[in-house]
Structure formats: C-alpha cells, structure tokens
Image 1 (spheres, rainbow, N blue to C red):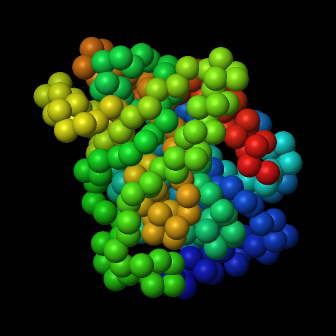
Image 2 (image 1 turned 135 degrees about the vertical axis):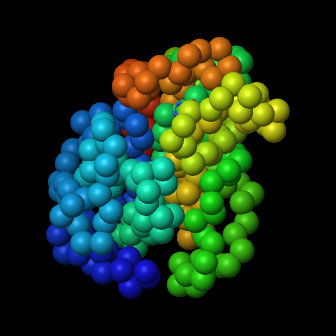
Length: 269
Ligand code: HPA
C-alpha cells in the first residue's frame, strides 16, 4: 500500500507541476461550495488519479483541487470516502496519506453531524475538541513504519492552537461557535433515540459517520488537525429528515465555515 500511495503522489506531483500545498482540506457533506473560495490552479477528478477510490454518494463531487486561498496554498478534497460506502479503511484514508506526501503541514476537516448536546441548534458550527471512535481503527494491520509509529498518542489530537485561532476569528467576525466531542459511527443508519441518549451519556456532543479515520491517520503522520462539524439536525429532539435535508443544512452553515477557514488560512501564512 505504501508503494501505491507513493505512486499516486508522484502522479499528482507531475500533474500539478509540483504545486506543493501547505494545507490539506477535506470538504464534508454539503460543504463542497468552499471550493468556490479557492483560486484554482489544478483540478483533478478522482477517477483520473491512479490509485484513488471513486466517490459514490450523491452530493459528493469527487475531485482534488489545488489552488490558493488569500495566497495560501491548499489542496482540497471535494468529496470524501466513507466507510459505509463499502470502502476499506485503507481506501478511506488513502488521500490523507497522499496529501502528506504532497507536503501538507496541517489538515482542515469538515463534516455534517447530528447534534446530541441539547444546547446545540441546527446550523451551528462545532469545533471538534476530541472524539470517541466507534468505527474500526484505520491503523489496524501492519504498521506503515515509513509514515509513523505503531502506537499513536491521541492527546491534543485536535490542535488547541487552531481551536484558539478559530475562537478569536469567530469573535472578530461575529460567528457563534460551539465546541464538543464528535462520536464516529459507521452509519449508514442515523441513530435511534436510545443511541443518541447513549452517546450523550458517554460524553458525546455530536454524532457523524466520517472524519475520525482521516484524523487518526493524520495524527499517525504527526500532521496537526483542525476539524469543524456542521450540526444539521438535533438527534434528541428532531426527526432526522433525509440526506437532502442534511445537505441543505450543510450548505447553509457551510458559508460560516468557509469564512472561518479563509480567515484562518490568512493568518497561517
Ligand atoms: N448521525 C450521524 N451522522 C449524521 C447525522 C446524525 O444524526 N446528521 C448528519 N450526519
């Protein structure tokens, strides 16, 4: 697999004229519009990248975008791979390994999730401060020694300095932020009421079906992580709606998330 990762990275380096992004961004469900804020230099469809899995979910565009945001060089995944689609964890996390080989120094991750914390409202942005992983661990199997150690420390998994920067930017821009623990499930079912209550009892603030595999693999490679969740429904009070509802709510709150990302990138130059 390491060879496959290296081959894919080599292909991309050649296809993008050695673009060298400094920040990797993963755009979650309904959050792909952030791509409009990127001054695009190169755009590669997943299907045209050797070794890349191909996205199957409606609303997930499958492309890798290279460009600048306020002069800051980024590579953004418009569309990610979910475990519930049937991909193995190696495939779900493959792009993060590739982005590391392309030179990223940090990873920004976004997703849509269901609020569990009763103070959360639909459309809130939650800075992920920690997680509870109820999915299979993507590092199970032979360790990729050339990427990182067998046993990975998960303290400060979500970089506190990025969270502090987000807080000061939110204050300056009048954006409301929530903070909390993300519970990762395989999906594709949304939670039962009993499961939402269980997640609340074990310390969760929001539940979703992504992010944690990519974050674990980023931390395996010592890449610092900033992660934001858009609360698209409130599990303990709402009926869930359907996937289109989640996408619609994601797009609305996505504007706020976009502002946060742009302002952070400006300051991280
Ligand atoms: N649960 C899990 N994943 C989700 C939810 C939810 O309530 N909402 C959006 N993604």
